[in-house]
Length: 123
Image: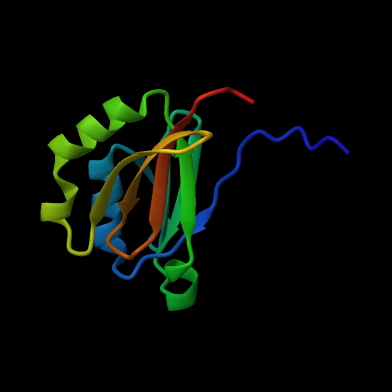
C-alpha cells in the first residue's frame, strides 16, 4: 500500500512551554500559534508540534532527526546563536562522522535530543 504522504509532524513536549517556544524561534524555526498550549514550528515544508505538556518519560526518550543540506554550515550557525548560554540545560555536541553521514546534536531546554545531519549518499 502506498501512503502518498504530504508531511509528517511529530509532537514534542516541554517542561516550560514559553522557554521552549523562544528556544525554537532562536534556533531558526518559524512559529505558528495554534492554541494557547500548542504551536507548529516550521522550516520550509517541514514542521513539528510543540505542546505545553510535560511527561518526563516521553520527553526523556524523544529524539528527532532533521536532515540538513550542509551540516558544517548548520553547526557554524549554531555556534553563532550561542543557545547554550542563553537557555538552561541546552547542550550542543559537535559533528560526528559515521558510515552513513555526518551529524551534530542539540539538547533542547526540556532534554529533547535533536540530530541534525547529512547523508553521504541520498536514498
